[in-house]
Length: 93
Image 1 (tube, rainbow, N blue to C red):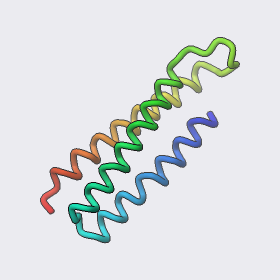
Image 2 (cartoon, rainbow, N blue to C red):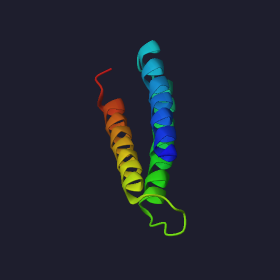
Image 3 (tube, one colour):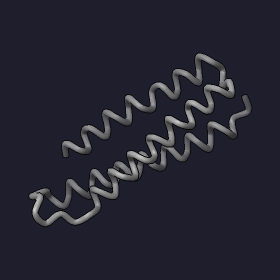
């Protein structure tokens, strides 16, 4: 569950700058590009963490339920990143 706790904290700390910069600079094209790069980074880290969580670990001594919960949270983080990328470029600003 340590991976999931770090992922929750990372998700909060990563999504906050996206909203703050987008709100402060009114969606300027440079800020949209910066937010897009941040979201792609979130996507890559979430994908890597979810793949690592769903991979079977026989020798590591981890519980299967905690691996499934951590992997599911990472997949939800991936979905949120994709949703934000779509909204970033389809916004009317």
